[in-house]
Amino acid sequence: SAHEVAIGTVTLPKDATQNQFVGISFPIHFNFTDSKSTLDMTPEQVTLVKESWEKVKPISEQAAELFYGRLFTLDPSLRALFKGDMSEQGKKLMSTITLAVTSLDRLETILPTVQALGRKHAVEYEVPDSSYATVGEALIWTLGQGLGDDFTEDVKEAWLLTYTTLSGAMLSGKSAAA
Image (cartoon, rainbow, N blue to C red; front, side, top):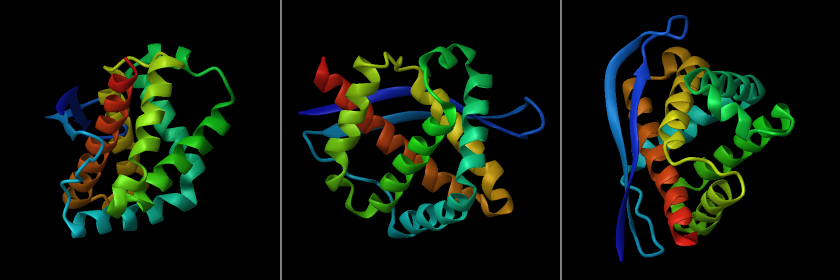
């Protein structure tokens, strides 16, 4: 059976040094059919994500700090969901993104793991669905900071598609747990 999960709307930040927004909002939707997801990305977009992530990996510790700092600025209530060492949490985040990025051209191989992660976030961590849009906004902002001029519109679009697909798979895993 097919499910469409609406995650929310994300507004992209204009400038890291200011709390101003471009006003560009994009809805995050994910179409999920049975146990197979199709990644609606071109091979060029997959390459853009992979190549840009290789540039972020050397600064992954700083990127994780930027990400969580931005996440908690956007929604301070999410801070309470994190009980452990944030440095360790950052390492987990970066390794999860690395796994996802390296698997983009064979998404079906990691889909069960992504769905299980969604179930865990819903059941054990009690992560609200609405936070997926906030996480997406924080991720896109962080990538923009880490990549600078290399974060082109094409790279941004490829990352938005990647995040939409993976967060949708996480939400579908949560739905399967219900």
